[in-house]
Image (cartoon, rainbow, N blue to C red):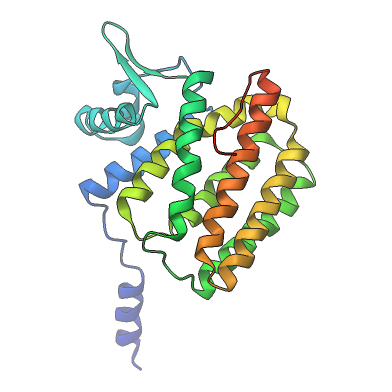
Length: 242
């Protein structure tokens, strides 16, 4: 190979990555803002400035408005006339209704177009369990919720039914931040332990392709999580059908 050929190959290797499309930029900004809300970087009551967000992401205010409109449709923010866009909160009554629905939807994961897991898919769950073990050595609220969110992404990938994925995702992120707010009362060690057990059970079922069991496992752990939250909130969390 000549020096000229080597230089040409280096040029190709060093070529800049393809710029993101408008849709990809929109999705990226949406995910960043959604995670900030769920991780309480933007706590309930925070005002989100279109101008500041446009400057941060180096875009015009139009795509920022579109992202905020999507977040509002999902109940994470609210547009208040004369004030701006405010991060919403979740009350106990709304929390109960959302959890009731999530319980029933959980069973559908293994019934509606389940997608077999590849070796790489299963390895990612094993990596999450290993991460959980590491995090438990020095428990942290934010690390717990980030781990929980990453595992939810793996669960969502187990169904090919897009409407089910969309509504499950919307409901999950509506209540995810509540878990973080209540963590001091719930107890980090207890939550990490219960969550690790859920991941292990889901992994065992996925390894043998028992998709229906995954739905029942998920439903059981959502139910237990909700009951722990209601117990510590001092509310009567009786769930019909349990």
